[in-house]
Length: 357
Image (cartoon, rainbow, N blue to C red; front, top):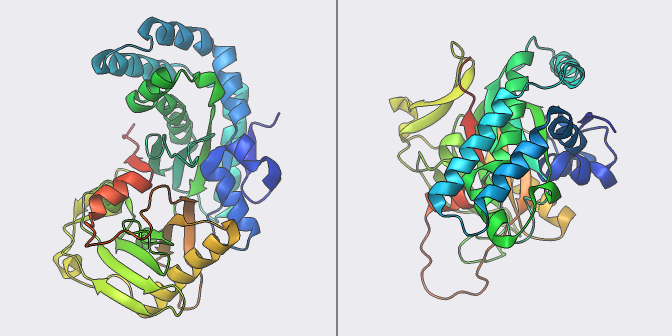
């Protein structure tokens, strides 16, 4: 089986099974005409082969069996750290490393860049299932540049299949980790002017008549990790009218650190802290994309989007993730308690900058 598959080339019928939920959905969106980043996935088969050929399978099985379903939180966290260290200390085989390196070089060529910065994203099978039990608990590393760092990030993403939360859940539910293998996406890092998340229904009230957008300057990690209070926008789904725009005081921004070669969080420049992030044209482009994605899938979605600093008015926004909205309360009465930090942490992946080498 292939170790690497491309977002724009894999058979959509096989995409989720071979490239995991996140990357498989990017393939589906690409074929539906949605603007998505260029990229490839290190497949589920590559992960399985790496674990088998390196001897990791036996060592991981021994740790999991030792812990057992009744283990306390501290014991689970120790087991998680032990397994993740195994992944980080076990080199990728020469042949697989060469395949990933060749694909990364091809991605740089397609992006007309040298050592193109990437987002290296865990893409586990089943993580975006309807109950969303695994939502947000696998790792993403932003700003990874250079083949060696990409290989390191791939191993760290493999290891994130065994975060404490994921391991504890599987132990309680008696689910084998062998039944939930992981792929890893390597996609171009879009140079973000602004980014955020958008819901095709109100994520608190469940009202289907509006699209809700959360946004801030730069990359969306400060929003995702609950480090910044984002601008909040509500748009009428039927007519595209802006129903509400609350400008937040934004104190943190996720920006690219060129010296360190990664995305990191810094203080928001004072000139941007209280400035409105999105204009009407950009709001319309985001709302249109979200509405089209909902219509494509036939169910409510939440979408992670990026507005490139190179985007011009009339261009589509770039969609970097889409998944089902998992919990709403249709028809709920009374005032809803809206907590953008809690929503960001609930619905969107956990992003981390890769540590410097």
